View 1 (tube, rainbow over the protein chains, first blue to last red):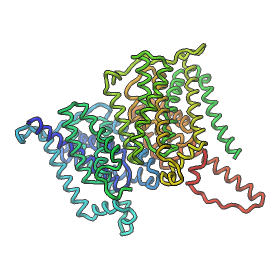
View 2: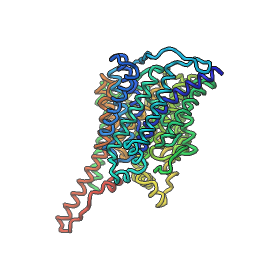
View 3: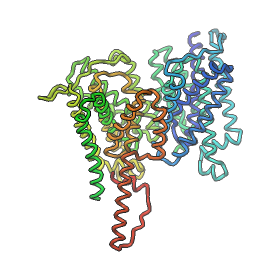
Length: 288
Length: 346
């Protein structure tokens, strides 16, 4: 039982990270109808920037994550302008190829700056807390709490503010949105900034638990794709449900079956969902 | 028409001649010959990618994985199981084709972005199987001593130049298949699917069947390239099935020109030579090449050969118009329609 509770918290914290990473990807897909293959690279850059602000600049942990998110938002806007905006009318294959180019560029850039070696980021949050009779590290508690706070703030932003609502409007109908005076270009930039900032928060939160290396974003990107396909591309509630489901499933499979099972479960889910219901489980009515 | 054909023919002949005489020119430089050998094995896989991405318009990100299956079939069968090169080559082609067929059954149920994501996951699964299934694949330690082809009569394939010519035969076959596909009805059907699946099925094309065929064939080519690669290198490791390889193959194709006959070989060799030029900062080459990929899809999505074909097409049209005015016929005002040019036979 203690093992289960402990693993449950591990699953929740992993799920929180997945959610934050997945929402950005699903937002970008909703607005621009493209799967951003460079999302995993943004995650990786976010982790390295947090590392940089924390260890080299000596900024407190939470502030380091916030700064990384800010820089990533700028990178996201730049990426939208330079890579995706010029390709907005091109066939869908072009976006993905260009995104792959951006991904390789970021890999190489990070490798040139920080080297290819694995790096460990010491968590500034130490100690454990007793919840339901088991020891849970504060780091994991921080991850879950931050993820929930960010998710609530994001939902408020999208549902209640003008800018957030304009994202939803463009998602529903790009032409219609521009007819009522919404600038789709500005919304695209905003979406990219938001997506990059969210993925930076995810990476900054999980960085002390995992190691840092230039290709750390590749596997998580496929997992995040699995999540948003499970939840339906473009659906935010779908990304949240999918993120926590996959996080829990992965941890439980690792604990009770084997490490390899935990590693491949995301891919099995992805293949199964696409094979049985190619449009995702919770797809919105307006898909094409 | 005859004239443009000859321009293309001359271009293709020049490339073929360069490839034919390369071992004679590079007689003293075995290193460059090795680069060419590796390049040709990649190019064969790129011809595979060309069928599914170039002709059919489906972005498959599983081709690094298919290449890896070819590599490992050849590598493991000729070492651990002591098969001969030729039987292992046949096994590699059959296995990748079968895997491609089965994967296609599932993957082709999805479209566009979903297809790309699905195949990317597929490629990663293949990579994970290869890099984790230590009992069979030896995982990260890899396998040494993959066989070269057995001698045929006086032909000794341990001689790099001889092996090079053998690869050239396979390459020519791949290019020839692409060419016949390009001018055949099957190729036209695939191009119609690329233009619009709905329109294609509305004029009676069996979209599912044709996509399935294209995907299967394209996986087979990737496997063939992989098998030859394993034999050429003599060593196999999990990196030859990674997702990075998929993107490299993609870049080769893009630089050369999608849906062209000469694009894959020209693109592959050109980029590999660039890699060699940047060899000193091998790991950082994508700082330059990443933006190059982006610039290519934005400004020259048709690639080098595609661009050349387009230029000959414009030239031909202008020449035809000039002839017409010379004869005195009213000049046909043909607006430049990019969609027409896309489907023009290259």
